Picture 1 (tube, helix red, strand yellow):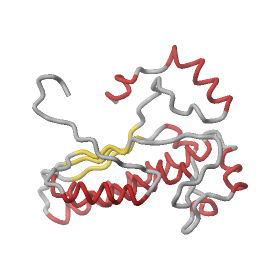
Picture 2 (cartoon, helix red, strand yellow; picture 1 turned 135 degrees about the horizontal axis):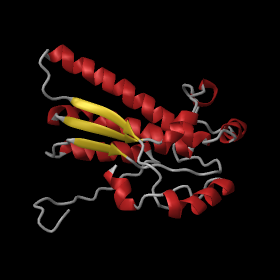
Picture 3 (cartoon, one colour; picture 1 turned 135 degrees about the vertical axis):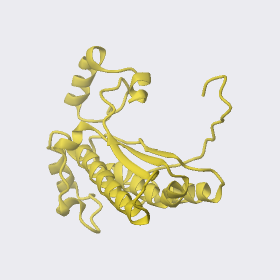
Length: 204
């Protein structure tokens, strides 16, 4: 916030590696009297090795998609009550290389099988691309449902909750520093020439 702003920043803990933390955060927010006009699902990870969360789910799958999915649905009542409101899913053009394979991500499958994980990591964008595709699919499906919901309420919709997925561009951060070595090297070489700084990235 600028020095002339009358607002304030509240810092509440939210750990996307734990569903219990996501639920606790949502319950705390819903118990407050705060409106919610925008929800930005921005957090994400991009690693090379198989890592499993305390909930028994592969790290990318939980942090990049499932926890955002849970958080969004938990906060949806407040978003509806605060409309006009917007949900922004920070995805990536990596989604174009993703694949939602039911053998890997089907019901009850947490993507913790080392062989299946290895196979998906052989793809151009690996499991990161898969989870970015999940974000786009979720955003599109949610927006369609919210649009239909608003239309059913009134034929003269002036405000509703919208859901969009965005690509922030190539931003100069240390994101992906634990990914495959060739990718780290490529990003390091290209960063001075193509990357936006963190302020430009935030503007997108």
